[in-house]
Image 1 (cartoon, helix red, strand yellow):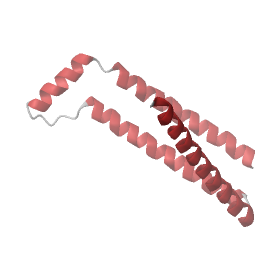
Image 2 (cartoon, helix red, strand yellow):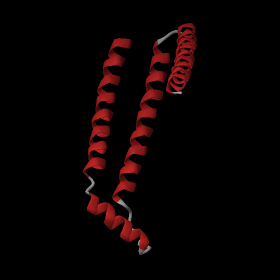
Image 3 (tube, rainbow, N blue to C red):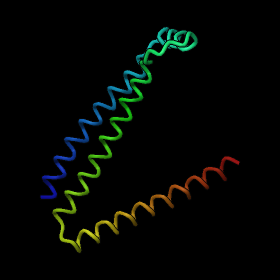
Image 4 (cartoon, rainbow, N blue to C red):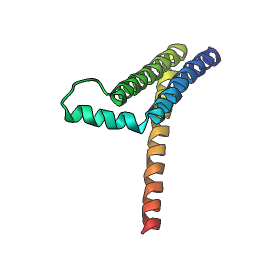
Length: 116
């Protein structure tokens, strides 16, 4: 059951990744001339939606969908596991997160001390 869930999650992640790549390409593809037009519109007080604002909204929506996928995945995992396994899983996930956070802080401190 976990294997089947993992395959489903990977498919959904790939869809989100493809949409993210498309959004990133759209941002890069915005011509400089369009940016100049946007600045002119802003200075003239026009309220037309900027293309970059639209891309920002699309990016925010994509992030919300990714959060929903994470929450849906967690709920499905907990639905498969026994209650005890679920508690152990959540505790292990929290420990991993805290360890990664500490490791990141340590690396940042090392980087900052090496830069000085």
